[in-house]
Length: 436
Image (spheres, rainbow, N blue to C red):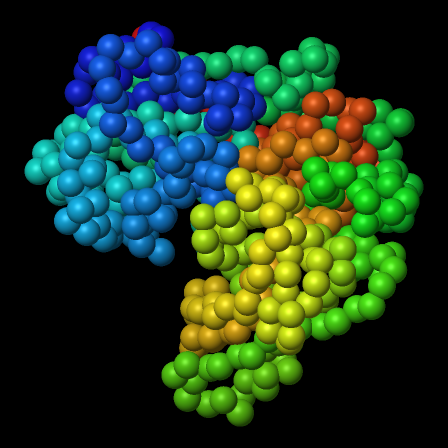
C-alpha cells in the first residue's frame, strides 16, 4: 500500500521493486496495485519477455507495447501512432518488469519518447513508472559488449529511483534452507555451491531419465533441462529425440539472400549449418510427441517462449501442436511456416537472409537465459563450462522449489560443486538507491 501511495501521489515518481527473492509478477502486481485504490487507475504493464507477459491480464512485451526499435541507440525513439500517444498521455502508471534485463539504451529510448509525447523534460515525461525486477538475475544481453556495463543503473535518472525490497522467495518458501542458499548465491556470498549427492547425475542419459522419467511422451510438461550454451542444449535435445520412439521427419528451411553481391562465395549448404540467433535452424527435426518452443510472436496465445508438443503433420509446411504453457495451454493450434528476417548483425554476413521455416525449436533443453521467468517442477542442469555471466547460476537454481527438484550433470574436473559468478558492483549500485 505504501509503495502505491508513493507513486499515485507524486507525479513523475519512479519506483524500483527490487526483489531480493524471486516473486512471480502475477503475485507481485496485486501487492503494488491494491484493490482499495480510491480512484480508477489507468495503467499499462509491460514485460521484457513474451512468456512473462502472458501471465498477466493486459500484459504486453515492452518492445511490442512501446514499439522500441531494434537495435536501440543513443538517439532512437519509439514509433507511436496518434492513438497510442493518447493512451500514454492518459496512463496514470506504467509497470515495467524484468528490470535487470533492460539495457540503458532501451530505457533511455523510452524515456526520450515519453518526454517528447508529454512535452516535459522530466524523466519519462513526468509519468509514474514502476520497475520490478531482481538484479541478482541475468543482465542485458549486449552484442559485442558486457551486460553489466549496460544496465538501467547507467541511466542519468537512476539516482532518482525510490526502492522497495520484497524479501520472501515465493517458489522456495517451504524450504527455508534452500531459500537462504539461493540468497547467498545471488548476493555473491557463496563462491562454490556444493551439489547434494542425491542431485548428481552420472551421464546424459541419467540426467534425461531423472528429469523426464522413462517415457518422454508422458513426462511432466514443467520439467526441463537448462544449459549454459546453445550447443549444450542442442546436445540434450538431440539425445531426447533419439530416445523417443516414432517416425522422424525433417523440415528444411528455404533461405533467400537479399542484396548479396557475391552469392557464389556463400554456398547455401554452409549457411544452413550456421547458427542464426533469433531464427529456427535450417533443418528442424520433427517427431510426434516431441516438445518445442515457439520463437515468433504470432497471435495472442502463440508467441515467443510458449512451449508446445507436436501432435500431427499437416503437409510439408504446417504442423498441429498442443500448447503446454501460456494462456492457451491445452489447446491445439495449426502452425504454418513463417518468414524470419536475419540481419547482418545476427548472422555476421554482409547481407540479409530471409528464412522460411516453422517457428519452432526443440525445448527438452533450453539455455538459462531462455528459461528466465518460468517456474519448473523439475530442473536438470547440464554444465560443461564454467558459469560465465552474472546471475546465471542464481537464475537456474531459482526456477524451482528446492534441491529435491534439481538434477545436475557437470562434465568439468570438479563434478561436485559449481563455481559462482556475480558482478558485485551491480548489486552495490542497486543497494545504494534511495529508499523511502
